[in-house]
Every structure is written in C-alpha cells, then in structure tokens.
Image (cartoon, rainbow, N blue to C red; front, side, top):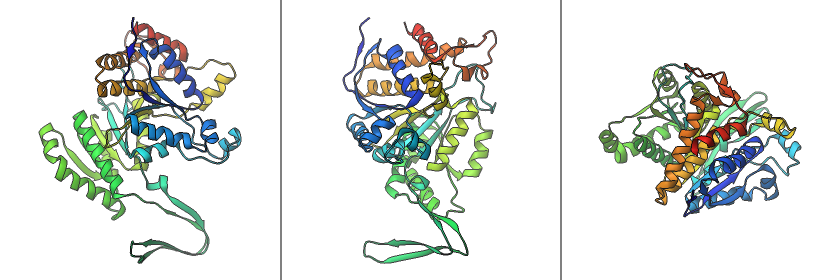
Length: 400
C-alpha cells in the first residue's frame, strides 16, 4: 500500500518521560506505516530546553506561526526537585505558557467519549468543551512576601503620570500578588471562543466573577459582550445557538445539571482547574483532547495530561507499563486532520479519522490500558488489560 504523502510539514514538539516513549511508539506503530510523515522536529525535552536556555521552545512556537499546525508531546515544567534531579541551570518556565503567549491562542479541551465508560455525572451525554484563556492572570503574576508595611499598586501612564491604589496595610507578615491581562488578548480569546462555538454548532457559556472583581473580570465581560453584539449575534442566531454570560459559581451548577454539548469559556486559572475536573468526571484525563487555536488560524494539538512520571520510573527499570496513550494519539490525529484540511489532502483527513475510530473501537471491543479497566462496563464485553505497546498494536490491527 502506498503511503499518504504530505505537502507541508507539521511542527513536531517532542517531550519528556513516559509520554516521550509513547510518542515514539505511536509514530512507529500507528502513523509511519501509513503516512509519509513530514515534520519539522523540535526537542522540547527538559535537557534540550536547559541546553538551549529554552530557545528551542521559542523556536518551535515561531515555526508553528510559519506552518500553521503543530503537535506537541507532554513536557515537564520544573520545580525545585526537578532542577536538582536534572541538574538544570534554572527553574525554566512552562513551555506551554511560552508557546501560548507567542501564538496568542485559546486552549479547547474536550472529552473522548467511549461506549462502556459512563461519566461520574450520569446526566452528561455529550462533550463539555473547556475553552481556557491561555494568557496572563496568575500565570504571569508578580508576587512576594511582605512584612509590616503598606503594599501599593502603581501605574504610570504614557505621560508619566502616576496612579496609585493601596492594596493593604500589613500589621505583620503576609503575601501580595499583582496580575495583569490585555484588551488585545481578551479580544483574541473572545473571537476564538465565538468562532469555535460556531464551527462546532454548540452554545457558548462564559463565566467570571465580575460581582467581586468589578474592574478586572468586568473588563472580560464587557469585551465579550461588545464583540458578540457587533460581530457574532446574527451568526449565532442564524446557527440556532446561544451565547450566555453568567457568574462562575452559577455556571458550575448549570454544568453539573446539564447534559453537556456546551463550550464553557473560562479565564486562565478557572480553565486550568475546571478542565481537570471535567476530564476526571468523564472518566480519565488521558481521554481528553486539547488544541490551542489562535484567531489567526494557528493550531497546536497536545494531550491534556502530564508526562506520567510514575510509569516512566517503572519503564526505565525495565518494567512493563500500561500507560494510556489515547490523548496523545488524538493529538496526532487532530494535527494530521487539520494539515489535511488546509492542504486539501482528503486521504490524510480520512486516515486520521480511521485512526480515531480504530482507537475507540479497540476500547469498546474490550482491549484497553489498565486505567480504563475499572471504569469500563459494557454488556457482553469483558475488559482485558494490555500494556502500552500491546494496546497500540491492537489499534494497528484495526487499521490494516
């Protein structure tokens, strides 16, 4: 069988630990036998980021701006323990945060639904897509420890005029934090959310806490409402979908009572937390897709989970692991589909869709990794635990 030929390379961002191992196996077993894979490769493993003073991360993001589609493996964001373990020069920033800032995108995360794995919230019948603003807030904050004294927030305008607000008069020690966002980034976030909801034909709910954060969160609410009224209201009405703003505590209650089928737009921290909650409630963080979409039409696909450190330590001891690769497979299929769509290669789109179906069919047929066995209940099917390579091979059999 002739391999499917690609016209434009994907930007390939390799990663760390067990997901780096799975990355190699997925290409070897599921993609390269069928696709003449063309990528521009960047090693975002922690050692290479340290060696290049994190320049490789910036280079990979700029390559994504050039080519339009990237696929990323999970990476380590080092803490103090990792600095010592890997003998790093410094505690490097999150590569995801760096890439997101350069691409100016919004992260959309959605569960991969499988017949036999029932969400912990039984009313959820359709996917809930978390749209996470990928810039600023606590992730770009400046914070510090205080003693007795006064903390102030100062702003100098372009004329050099100073505006100061007292944060707090400390009678003894404490902590203080200042964070920011920009109108431009919020506007990009809003348009990405509205466009995604239209593409998916799903209602869009946006939530903040503007009753408490009247200026900061209020600015998010204001920008979303203005853009919706000027640019998207007629499009949403024509598509038969709604846009709704409400407080985050209200939307949490609504989400729990819903059947799903919603795009839930969240600020950066809210989206970080709620995407893990939604993924777990659907069954597993390893069954969650994640794509960064910019208003300029740039796409970066990745798994929603981390590097599976515990399994990696077993792997390097020579022990077998049953690590779930599904989210990483779907990162590859998402990128291949988008590349096929942009380059008008229907065979590539069809292959990616067949790989997704083969992955789901394998699980529904009773062959799966260990994390799914306890979650799987389907009449007439007894789940069988496979190690990672066995699972990938079982998927490959359904592709041939």
